[in-house]
Length: 96
Image (cartoon, rainbow, N blue to C red; front, top):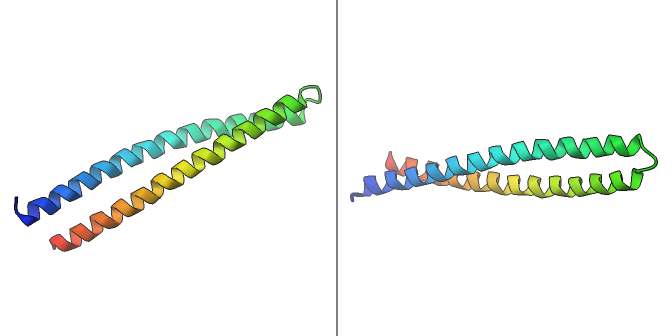
């Protein structure tokens, strides 16, 4: 392979990785919206029910922790995408 073909191959690999990361982020966004809805539901149930307040408080805290975890996963994926984009930009500039 000549140098140009190698560089184009590297770009293609990174773009495929970016596509995979984008799909993962979309899945995380969907999961985040669901968790956010459920956390909000438990918040409202907690405020409107004195008998089950402790149960709803516990569930709300559980979902809040899940939201934090999924948010950090999303941030990690976005950071990986930024790194890949910089690599793609570098290789593209070297091709020109």
